[in-house]
Image 1 (cartoon, rainbow, N blue to C red):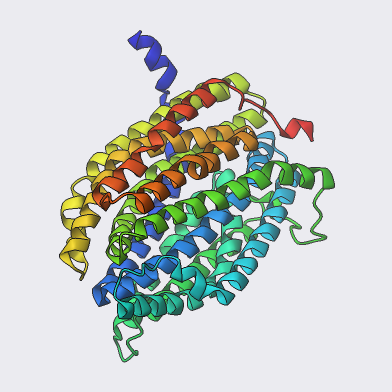
Image 2: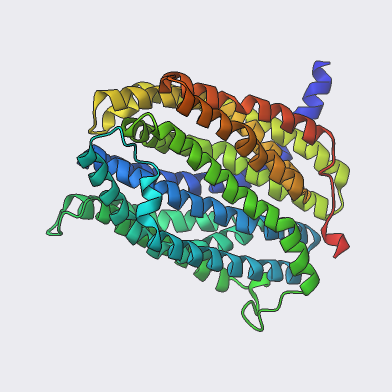
Length: 465
């Protein structure tokens, strides 16, 4: 029995070497980005609670754009990974063009929406139970931060399109180099602009936003320049902007399979933001605490998030090469690896609940809530990892309709109603409300297990084009 389980879930050195070579740069690149956000967050948190809360609320909407862009590249990314596995650079080129167009369109639309309705959107997270002057200050800080962050949307969107195609080709070190190029500048500018050092004015949240915008632009420039100066390695980039043709049938197939993924990511992140809004009913202290806990949790989450993305690339490539049985076997091993790695990271994260909130210049009540949230999120991490791995498994075979219901459906049909009812119609404290909603994902993990086990995702989609 033990030998059978080992054969099914434990891979050989060759598999793990490939995974590590691919996923470690992806993890490091994302961790560097999250670390910069963490430093940025801590510096703003040292200024004051209202500033930190305003930035936290604004970042809820920036996060919606980020995840929507991830969804936008996911559909063409399925085809791109399988075209790469097939050795079809022309097919990859056309999926890349699609990514550039959709990312630019989404970024521009987000800029328009958030510039017109910034006050109305930010106000959704402000509770009437808090002091009016505190609410007004938080809103104004959020608006100042958001107005500057809008500048980064289109450069960041283009960067996401380039990162997507580079990663599916296995060039994961390039986004990492981009992140490393920007990290020092970002932290330095944070220090100088937030606190007014070296003769610069003290800009607070606006300084944090300016530093972040510059950092995102630098990361995109590095990826674009490397891609177009290494055309021998990136054949899909040769003649990329000549004619900008996308085969109608391929375009239709990308939209057919990609639109559910785009809508899934948008609706999923919108649902998670609304759950955050449900928590905000308990007051601005909860928003500040959630901001602190999320900042450190995001850093650790990158291990399982990027391992999931690696599943989509590796398994998708095998499906595109028509190695269907090998894809299933590899997926079993990567599912186990993702959950096991998350369990290990969870243990490392637990001690942070005790000391990390003390770094912030805020009230003790906020620190206590933040420490509790970090503890709960650390315990939930292996569950999230398995759910994430199931999501990418289903996506690798192009089963985007099922993926849509699995991800978005669970949030909107179960988690969000649960959070809404408990926050509006009960007097449960955040210490009870938060773990109930968080651990409800156990149900989603069970659903994911049976969907993956059904093998309905084992599908070669590029041979049909």
